[in-house]
Amino acid sequence: MDIEKEFPKGLLRSELFMGVLSSVSAYSVRVNLNDAGSPSGSHFSGSRYGKGEVGEFVLIEGQLNLLLGRVTDIKLPEIERRSVTPTYDGKSKLDAYGNIQLLGTVSMDTLKVTAGVASYPRLGDRVYAAPLKFVSKIPTLMDLKIGDSAPLTLKLGSVDIGSDNQSGQVEISPEKLFGRHCAIIGATGGGKSWTTSRIIEECLQHKSKIILLDATGEYRDFSGDFVQHCHLGNPVKKAIDSKPCSLPPASFQESDFIALFEPAGKVQGPKFRAAIRSLRIANLKPNIAPDGFIKKINQPKSAFQTAEQDPEISVKLDDPKQEFDVSKLPQQIEQECVWPDGFNDTTKWGKVDGNFSHCLSLLTRINAIFTSPAFDCVFNSSEESLSKKIDTFLNSDKRLLRVCLSGVAYEFKAREIIANVIGRDLLMRARDNKFITNPLIVIVDEAHNFLGRNIGTEDTATKLDSFEFIAKEGRKYGLNICLATQRPRDITEGVLSQMGTLIVHRLTNDRDREVVERACGEIDRSASAFLPNLKPGEAAILGADFPIPLTIQIKKPTTKPNSDGPDFQKYWKEV
Image (tube, rainbow, N blue to C red; front, top):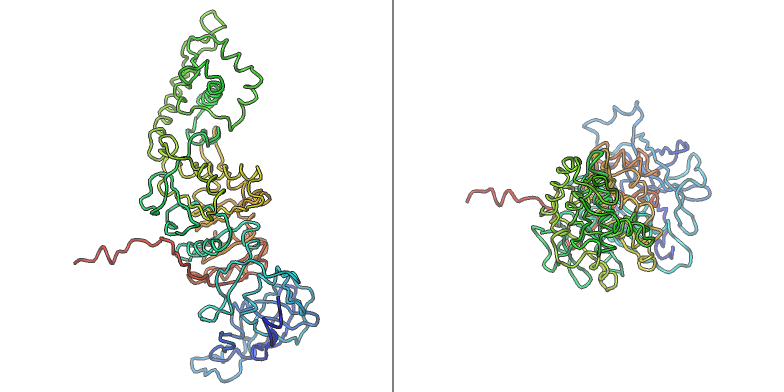
């Protein structure tokens, strides 16, 4: 960075002088405020400065370097408190002081910003309001490498809130935003969806590869040569050029079917797994299963046992990815409910035993799922598979693949299971090093609906953990995740703790703020205290990759998400 070009008159401007230090501790300092009694802030270079307002960033002129801090509270000594009355005109001086949280150190020669305090200031050191242009460049200055060319950055918003001055524009490198995963968090109406749209728009300006799992269809208006849409199920509203796709059973693993069909008790579970094992043999040795499943009732065992003991087949039987014809599960489960031997004949199976009656509820559930519209895209679709669409997308010049899940129903936990299958498919590709030279960002909207879910009974409990594994190991393979959620408390701390960057909009729920605090080791209560009062569209950027929290106003996206509720004024007003 050319310091003289960016800040030709330096950072510590006399017009921004705030006061001098009167107290120093390990975590904060106290400043005597010169202009605390002024009726309003001041303006400098087109921007407004409070010179002592809560939330304002400041620079402390130390002996060896500059210290970056933030004003957390302002007070008057008790003896002065009564001097502020309704008749106060703002002309007289107030003996006010402010507490400043120490955030980082600024190198005097390069302006490189580092977290922590290199050397503490002394009493009497001068304090200045930090120029907004400097504050906006903190993310860049934390990554500053002398001699490097200008890095590729994403323009998310501005710290110069309420002004048309563009000097406060915040630019963040993709490495810092997505490098250790990202989470966009905020209560309803806080601007979470706009931030997601803004990030997507910025990424589309570059040779990015993004897969967006759109839970509600609100991002359907994205368009252009670099955008591709597809949908599972039958969305109520879909993009004009969206193509239907399927998620065939071959995409599922044994654990997915256990989560889906929920075999219960001590009978259904073993019979269910035995049926899957038999169907795998039927798939690998079709000559012994002319009807697609292994017949066992009163049938000889020899052909089945020979196939089961075949070395090439036996090694595949316990592979959770080994395919089988799931449509034959009801017939095969019935065939598994037999006596182990025929009447005085150990070479054949016997008649149907009493266990079949215990499996009737399981067969009913399986048949209900096969015919449920929620799973038409799995069991009753001839459309191209989503996996093939992902292959086409990765090998094309497209930059955004939006997968709409709004047409997938909630019954039978369809959304959670289908999203988990998609996540595991991407994780398997990552482990095969498909994204090393072409990094992929997966954006999961309404992530609280999909992550951290446990499905099934006590005997067959299954954890849907594909995205949790992506959060833990994906980045070393070039697969990064960006979560958007309004309920961080519903996402496991194991996932949130892996998020290097948190973009947090207004959070009014105490439990949500506590989860964010625990997930982000660099944030303390003084920083999280600002979260309930953020305005719509305003967000705090923090996390392991942002140890110096920064509050910005997200720039409005060109393609706005369709997240508005019903227009009661339009439809309820009598004509």
